[in-house]
Length: 272
Ligand SMILES: [Zn+2]
Image 1 (tube, rainbow, N blue to C red):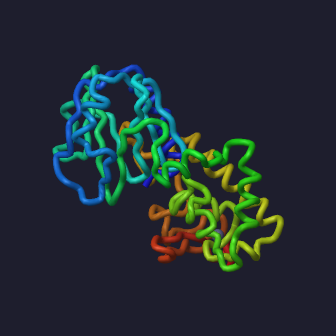
Image 2: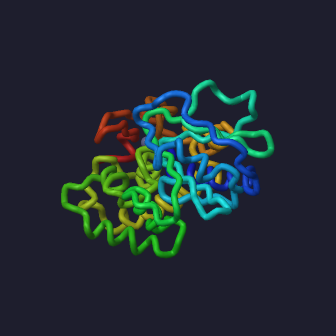
Image 3: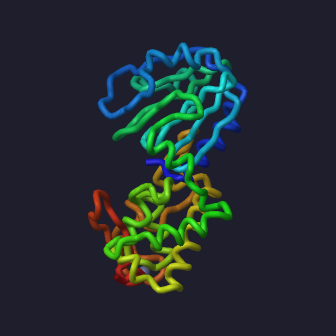
């Protein structure tokens, strides 16, 4: 799934590779995917964006968005795989294919679930709005948002839940939070109410630094970019490193199921 570093990488690559291109043809889904959500129905896409020119792309929260010269926007959320492919590279099945005027295609597929929508800027969808209105961790206002969210936290809220639920921080989810918590030396099940002032400050710094590094390097190595290449950021705590020795202390990295997903942590560096 895409998180903020991948969304920013994707929008940057769209700006580099497809800005200025015109949509020559819109190809509908080759096969129904129960968990690929379209807004509006894909049969209407041709009428809205067929012939439109891509002006630019933007990334925010869990969305990457293409802006067209007719003021419409196409956005994809964190579950969509978007690739730029030549005709001979297009897979047999996809959820959407936009043929560009330079012979290449934007091809959209979905693995578990995802959404593709074409809309004006005022798209009414709660996840979209939360992402749109989110304060970027790279902007000045983020510290205040972080402290506000901490102050609002219920006593039982754990560190993983704090970072990844309730749209507190759109774009931080079960991937990037693992490395953020490791960098801050905080256990995923630690109650945030028990964090010391130093730990609170450390967690804030870890959010900014880890997401910054992931973005600078083109996303995490567990995800692929617009060109199909894995991101250049080597994840420290992920499926790629489970059970391997911790880089800091050598203790084997633990993988556990927690809150509808796996958590990876070092039981020595991140004591609960
Ligand atoms: Zn360790």
